[in-house]
Length: 449
Ligand code: ASP
Image (cartoon, rainbow, N blue to C red; front, side, top):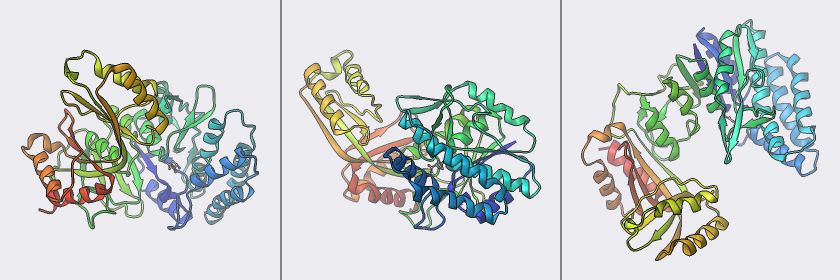
């Protein structure tokens, strides 16, 4: 059995939905289909999810949001009319209207319910179209199939019993069309993942039904070794491990949601990235263990928006529990840290600037000064993280030296260097203005020589 997830660009209009359905029909193993909300049709278009977010906000501010409501329902009408499944429209329109008109007791839950409408309606449309062309398909409601979610410290997690509930998808007659991006709290309220979260739904479903492969259909032929916006004709990756992909996703590869690999990884299900607009291409396989090594470095990525909290204290290495005390102050502010390079008398904690707000910085720095008797504490903002990632690096001498030398020859100052214990990645901290340049320099070093 194959679980296939289709992203927003694959479902942006009726002709894209027809391509999706052709792909579904082409292999009878494609039994579970997860859909995103319709994405952009042209460069200036707006994703349905973004329209829904704007509509939800208008409703919360007391406006009726009529213009947005009409734009959203028109997008679904256009698709349904072109696919000749107008019968589905009254159900969709009523569902949108009921959801946005419901009384608001919790604004977060209200926004999540409104955001989920894109995937909900799109799944209804795909199921209706498959049935119209004679392929038995069922719209599978995440509530009916027990996709239960909870939120801890703002992170959405799937409740373990969901997997057992969702394994029942195997018994559904015909194709299951499942909306991505949302599930339900145990209290029965809608909860969405973060943006791009339909990838996570697909992975959860693949794990639940123990699929032979989780196909993730998008609008690129494969994953490339570097962002194609930075380098012309970048090196294509045929095969990559979960661990490599996780590191690259973390540092800015946006092909897949950062949290989407975990459920598939736990069950060892390969993830296959494919292009809806070019289904004959090989795509990229994300696997537990690679058999293909085309290059020493698998990928290079860079991401802005980090900062460091730097602490100096003489004889820090002798002080039992110093790092624990620092981290507990950070944890008290609800922050998780990204990296923690250290010296004998200093420690730097790398945090995401969007979480480490100025308010939090003031409180944390104040407590560190008052409670930890330190020599100095200061924050550097506007830092970028650039990573080179590759399983083959662990067995090759001199990769870090090569990378550092290339960056130094290019005049890029390294604020931080960090290598994880797995030796599959090396992270360089550089000023944000050097991020893209550093990525290109490293790409030239490892792929163009
Ligand atoms: N529609 C949602 C978004 O635009 C979720 C998804 O597409 O995966 O983020």
